[in-house]
Every structure is written in C-alpha cells, then in structure tokens.
Length: 439
Image (cartoon, rainbow, N blue to C red; front, side, top):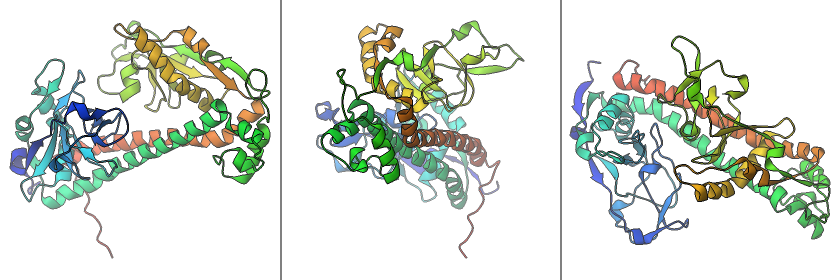
C-alpha cells in the first residue's frame, strides 16, 4: 500500500446543499419532477425509488440532478439512522430528479477525486460509525457537510480507485437490474391476476363475441397453444351469483392457512446454543441486520421461516412478501401463509389484492399500532376456479412468480458478495485486479 496516502474528504470534494422546494407545488399525482428525499437512499447504500414525491413548480436549473451525480443524505428519520450519511448515485430515470433540501450533492474539487470511489467510501463501516456517532437530534438524526468532509481515510492511486469501482459497481448494477425486472414481472402478474379473477376479462370478451383464443385472453397470453388451452377452460357465461359459471367465492382464510408467529421474547437465544434471527416487521421490510434479535432454535418447526415462505405482517406496517433472507424465527404480528391446495402465486396475489383494504382498516384503528383481525381475513372474498383451471393458469403465473423469487435470492448473494468485498478493497487488504487490456 505504498502508493496509498492519508487523506481527508475536504481535500477532494465539496458538498452542496439542496434547494427548499415550495410545498404548495408538491403532489401525490405521478406528474412533474421527483423530489429526492432521504427515503430514496437504500439501507446499505444505493438509490431506490420508493413512494416518490412529485413536484409541479418552478425549478432552478442548478438543482436538477444528472445521471451519475453522487448524492448523500443529511437527515434520517429512522431511530438507528440507517441511511444517514449514505451515498447514492443518481440513476438514469424519467422524469427528472430534483436536488431537494436535506440531500447533499458531492462536487469534486481535486483531479485525484474519483466520485465513484467516494460514493463507495461513504458506505464503509469506519465512515458510517463516524457520521452516525457525530449525528445531532434525538428523533430525527442530522449530519452536516462539515462532519462528512472531516472524515479521514487511506486514498489509493487514481487507477486503483477506478479498479475498486469496477469491482463493486457491477454488483450494485445487477442488483438494480434485478429489482427493475421484478417490478416488471410483478406488474405483469398483477395485470393478469386482475383480468382473470377481478374483471373476468376472458369471460366478458367471449360473451362480447371474441372467438380467437389470444383475443379472449386479452393478449396477455401470447402463446397460441397456451391461449387456446386457457380460453377453453374459462366459462362463457355468468351464474346468478355474478361469477363465471362453475367458479366459487371463498373467504381468504379458507384458501390458505395464516399461522401467527410467537412472542419470541419468551424463547431467547442461549449463549453457546444454536439460534435463529427473529423476523419482525422491521426485518420483513428491510431484511436481517446486526440489530435483529435472536431466538432459540428449539422452536416448533412450523415457526421456522425458510426462503420461499410467504410472510404477511398484519400489524403496524402492513405488507406481504416472499421471504428470501434465509432461516429465521417467526415473531408475533406476522403470519406465515401457506396452503396444501392452492399455489403460492394464487393466495399471495389475493393477499396483495386485499392489502389496500387491510391497510385502511389498520389505519382507522391506529392508536399506537394499527392492525387487522382474523375476521377481516374471513370477510375478504376470493374467487376460486376449478382445479384444472388453476393448474392451467399456473403454467402462466408460476414462472413469473418463480423468477421474482430467483431474482431476490440472487440479489441477496450479490449484496453479500459486495458487503464482503467493500471493507477489504477499501482498506487495501484485497487489491482490485487490474482490468485486462483489449487484444
């Protein structure tokens, strides 16, 4: 490491504050520009577009972010300051992203500053400890450009800075590609599900006179043979109950089992004995972390969650997803949802279909933590076709569902690889291999 030197961030970069955009131009409608907020910084680093905030007002041009810009969050609302001081690289995206207040824009002021390298430095443990340790505020944590710029570190040569970026950035790029692919796959699955089970599109199109199988299936099943097979399984009439003939309405809790978790504080891990991370609402939302509690592994097997299990939080932040974080213990306020009769895509999409309704119920009951009750599962109706129809539908839906799970599992492996390499590359313990020259 002879060519690595002691450096301070203030030698290499400045941090520019964002603009206080006027609240009168904020909108929940997906129009206009997007305001970048601390919520756009993923735990662990990187950019995410969760619950975007839109803006339809005048914008000073110097506060429009460009793809490739490095930004850093100066405020964090979470109790543990999960993203305070973290960096993100502005992605290529439409509409425009705006440099909002509480966000810093990293500006290079020295030729030896590689902003990609700086972005990765801002995701290292020593930097994080320094920024979080010096944060101000009790509920809302804050940092400042001065605190960030005071960070000292070992700076490699410009070439090795780029070599490190070339090792780490493709891992993040692949994670982002998988995430976007899953958004597309989820949108496809939701569209097909709604057409089949909510709008009864194939039945209505057949009654309207459509005869071509692909047209009956609404173009959502482009393979001619599969479209013909599926179209033949859809009824061509509605019964007196308003459902396709031969289909039945059933309560949500009758098509799957909803297993509530345990009060795992009663099953604490014991030193020297096998244990499991506790899956709470926070873990369901953000994944396992060093702060996750541990429980004794001597739990009944049904409360041990594995990759591919479908989890539904019925309290607090209501959400549902397929778990892909490895083995864990199911805490109270979470359901493991399973069925011996119906495929996971079927009951999983019905849970997602009713989620807005469940969230409204929980919000109306919220005192400290809103929730739903089992009777709400009973009151949530599902529509169930005969078994042969479900089997044929699975030929379309299951590959979409399986691919989403595969992408999530791959992202976990990629993130673990990235997080293993990051401290070693940034300390010089592992050297980035030079890029092979083109022949």
